[in-house]
Amino acid sequence: MNFLNTTDLDDLTLDRVLLAAEQLRSEPQQDWLAGKSVALIFLNPSMRTRTSMEVGVFQLGGHAVVLQPGKDAWGIEFEPSTVMHGEAEEHIAEVAAVLSRYVDVIGVRAFPKFVDWSVDRQDKVIKAFAQYSTVPVISLETITHPLQELALALTLRSQLGDPRGKQFLLTWTYHPKPLNTAVANSAITIASRLGMDVTLLCPNEDFLLDSRYLDIATTQCSQHGRSFEISHDIATAYSGKDFVYAKSWGALPWYGNWAKQQPQHHEYKHFIVDEEKMSKTNNARFSHCLPLRRNIKATDAVMDAPYCVAAEEAENRLHAQKAVLGMVTGALS
Ligand code: CP
Image (tube, rainbow, N blue to C red; front, side):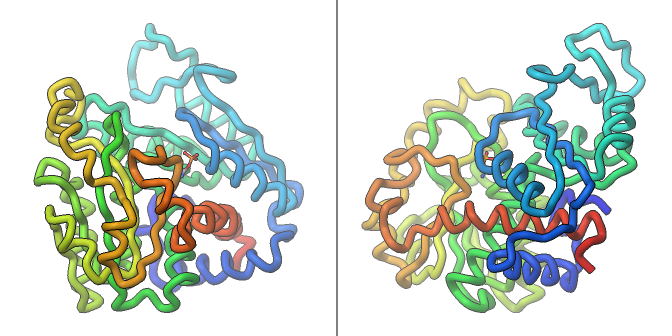
């Protein structure tokens, strides 16, 4: 089986993966991947995902091979039936077929191209890997970040106990560049799945996420009898929250047109997470997927506060990913 989105997992499977990850915290060494290999394809930079996947595969007794197409491996063409007179030296059909003969799992990081959201929202690169591979494919972040979702879920469970009925805030934050919406899409997806009241705080309607993810959050909150709210008011949005999650992303109406969005984007530096905003919460924990620019997205005081659990969430990536590797290879029964 592939692992491309948490929404592909039924509730029982999601819970099984989270429980396995929690057990792996205290029993990190397993032989689930003994004699097996994992290819990790990075089309974009990474620190946490790459390190935690490599270490996780090692702790499960397997071997990881990292490939960066266009850098240390041939560039890949993803368009079907195309004349390949561009930069790419080989087609995904051959790449996936050959890797499937060498390894037992393929992980892929493929960020959007930031040109046309109507194209990027189709998530074609990871779908092409899934189409042409004969071994399981794991998303290492595309237009969602499902492994980060699992790490966030583990963090919510360890910090809040049962997250059901607790108040979750996803706040947009300023960043000098327009970033991927993946983690934001994922944050509201998993918080609503866990039965939390979810608030999305962003400067104005231009910064709303794709309706696909707003609909998922709305539906899942409703299924749990909880609420999904959108707010543009900082004080109200922080008030009484149990968990504050921050992420910056580029406004979708300006997608591919950064120069036009830039002046508006820079008006919202005050969305930075600071102690004054955190003081409005219900002694909330704060987290971020990282990397994070200090004193741009969150202040030093917030990042160094005992309530900042970003490092724990990053550690949880390791446990969650090992559980996912166990799931896709059938070792986790
Ligand atoms: N959070 C996360 O995916 O970090 P990296 O980009 O460093 O992998």
